[in-house]
Length: 427
Ligand code: AMP
Ligand code: GLY
Image 1 (cartoon, helix red, strand yellow):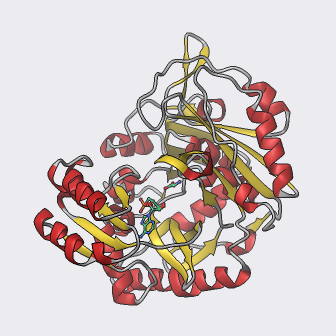
Image 2 (cartoon, rainbow, N blue to C red):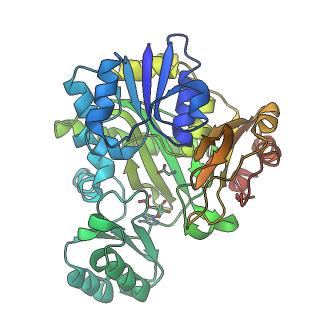
């Protein structure tokens, strides 16, 4: 089988790494990929948002299956275009991808179906939003969450600690349009208190196969300080997601969400990512995404025992083959190494040393912002790579991951030192 993987992050390197283990896979193409993807796949230059260009390539090369990593091409209709041409794709169509593309769509669906989530109000007018904050939300003794409606590249959310910060966020998002057009409409949400967890499932219509739960570390500095990032590290499984909590997530969230989509004539195919807050009232939805999380994929896929290519192909053909997948009971930890300055501005083109040394410890190094320049591996993005290690305990996985990280060097490299500390003691 010839597979095309669309995207260029650590998530896509992890997907390609897992697909490459499948006996049925003959060739993998990576569009546009990164230097790490290029070790396992043939790189194809291109822009993931050029929907027709990507589909033209898949058609011309007789690709058997296209696996789409990031949300933007899915929200823009890449899966629809491939299917229109009779090609198989793993990833939801445009209608189903609204679950991530429109926070208002997702919220309305949850409220109509009684799926547990933060209560919220929607505003198109900044004056009315400000009035609501001054007279209602601001009176509560908890933070106020202000979200731009559209896709805002994983940003677009401000957790305001008081009325003034919330008013400032409304001004920034709706009047100054710091997140662009996605700020035409905002949601003001109740703050959900409790640990976060990511629960991803392989989905085919109303059938689903849960993956091991994982937990991201979104803030840039140790102790969850500093601004939000795309994710600085991750671990799986998550001790606080007990079998009871898992059952609540499946019964109260995943099942009714897929049923609600089906009821509206929407057939979901691909990965459903549920971002949760584990509150004292039980798990509640913070957000839905329509793809694998990044870095979550970098801890979850190494724990998957089974053939990812066969599973994605089956789902793309409207079949589900859950009995062929099991999950390791090992612990996985991924530490993201980022460029100096990230998530703010940073320099690119810094030479990277030591990846082979890190790999020789048994760790997996998933590359994200990397390129080959004049024959040398250099940095080319904010998140440069993710170092994943497995262990029989979280302590072992943490020690192995950081031992491998210590072998890798590039100018300005920074990473959190406390990834997975929260899992210790609880496991
Ligand atoms: P999102 O883009 O919706 O994932 O939001 C980014 C981050 O903001 C989440 O991972 C949470 O840490 C935080 N967040 C979003 N919505 C809420 C909420 N209602 N209550 C508490 N934290 C939230
Ligand atoms: N790590 C968060 C995300 O992929 O959305």
